[in-house]
Amino acid sequence: MTVFVLVPGWFTGAWVWQETAARLAGAGAEARPVALTGMDGADRSEGGDGIGGGDGIDLEAHIADVLAVIDAVDAVDAGAGREIVLVGHDYGIHPALGAAARRAGRVARVVHLDAAPARDGVPALAALPDPALREELAGAAAPGTLPPPGRAEWPRWGSTAGVPDAALDRLTARAAPQPLGTLLQPLRLPPAVTAPPATGVLCTGNGAGIGMLQLQVDFGDPALGALAKARVPFFELPTGHWPMLSCPAELAGVLLRAAAGEGHRLAPFDAARPPAHLRPFPLDVPERAGERSGHVDLYPPDADGPRPAVLFVPGGPLPAGARPGPRDWPVFQGYARYAAGQGVVGAVVEHRLHGVADYPVAADDVAAAVAAVRADPRVDPDRVALWFFSGGGPLTADWLGAPPPWLRCLAASYPILAPLPNWGLSGDRFRPAEAVAGAGGLPVVLTRVGRELPEIAATVEAFRAAARASGAALEVVDVPGGHHGFETLDPARARPAVRHAMRAVLGHLTG
Image (cartoon, rainbow, N blue to C red; front, side, top):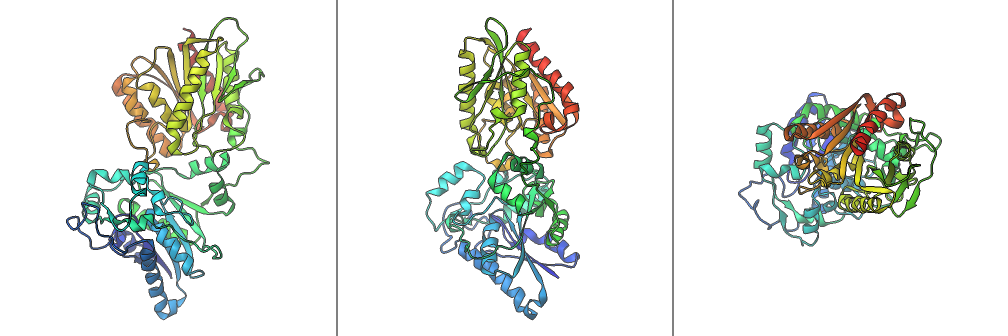
């Protein structure tokens, strides 16, 4: 028999697992939710509205709570050969990993349930989705507590997609203040201890799914590359951050499969097989070298006089130092050369979007690249188009909200058009669906793929709805059956779609 030791996340207690535990038991497994010190039996009227209490409650106290449950399993008939699977939800992965390290060989598997990576020497504070709150709490001192969210504040901590109203009311009523010591004390994992096998469960309504992880592996992300080499299995649940409340039956099924070692394995990077972004551009375009200056490569046409320009903005986030960089990818060189072959200046910017916190830096890089392109004497500064790709989509918001008169067209191909919930990007910036109301008559050309990653497709449809509501001049180029990054993955479908989109953009530049 498998014993699932279920470790709750921030603000919650053992009660949050009630429905999932019942379904695991119904399937013949045993489920033991962990009551974390200071987190169970709390009431919002008892210290939930201010910083206070939490004395002596730190990460080690919660690790001890998990150890007590593991030891209680072993105390019954010496464990009777029962296999223990630890499940940690968001913050809960920290005490789960700490306990697994102290009971080496006793824990068969650790399941990371919609949990950010936990690393030795790093406190759980680093996993908080809100960067402003991380910065605020970094200077705090334990003891003390972090008040639980109000009903409308839960999305700051993870998407509530799929959670019924009654369950959200229960979550709000039973949420407990989080002791600051549990967030500020670093996790310590003995280096000599062999970690048990791991499984990841991704809630796609809250952030990235398996497809996006595979893209990051192909881009050279070292942490995900290590998981791919280790053959760590993953599952997806099409729900928000609280699957024990939104889909407990489906979660129980995934946990049972995880205990059996099932799941999707990421494909390791294979230098002998070029990843999609390094495959050839689908159209035959004239060979021409780009002129590199700072963060911008320029591809001028064989034409006299100032010409219109298209600045291509790659996506991300991409690992810092990944090589080749986007300016050297065939797809962006191909687009820029294609533009030059049509008599306009093609340009590619390489920005510094290495993590979701880097969007402001990347936005500055794009603005600087625009200024550099418009200042080139071969460019007509009053006829410029911007073309964004994939994770560069949130950067469109700066240009949609108040388009300058020289911006004749904005294009976006398979873009992410809203920050994903677990990115923790607060504020009104980088939200194209909100910014498009200010686009006025700016032509927007959106290339949409039929087999988009679900978490990205949801942002595209929200943007289209907002564009329709505001009367924006939106033209959609559909690629039925096309994948994210379709130019090199689906060359037959790509050729007509790329031509269509380029004609639309150039028509607004030269018409």
